[in-house]
Image (tube, rainbow, N blue to C red; front, side, top):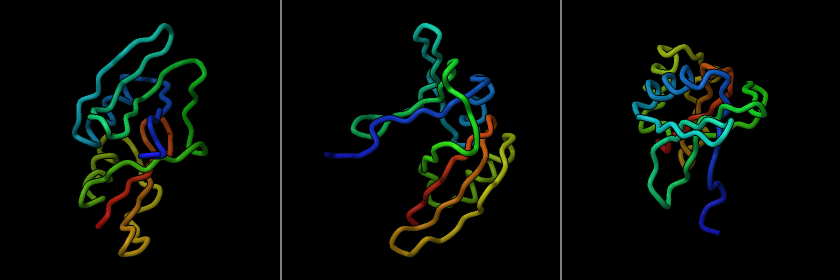
Length: 122
């Protein structure tokens, strides 16, 4: 097994709002795709990196008590945390050192109310 996580989906009740939030927070452009009544906004990635998307469908319900994924926060978690707040999110746990070997983590609530983690090796 090369990697444990192959794909992730973050539920959204308002895909356009969630897309704008993540594009601002991570300074990326998401690609919108439709599959029947399912809408996705796909994060940019290149194989073999893990891919993922925002998901808008009847079965997808955002919330802060669901699964937590940790996204790459870059060298300084303060930067994406500040952009998340500016885009309408809120900090749930500030940048916190786990250990020098593991690095830092932080948690924020996104525009949909999901709890999302950030990780930085430094």
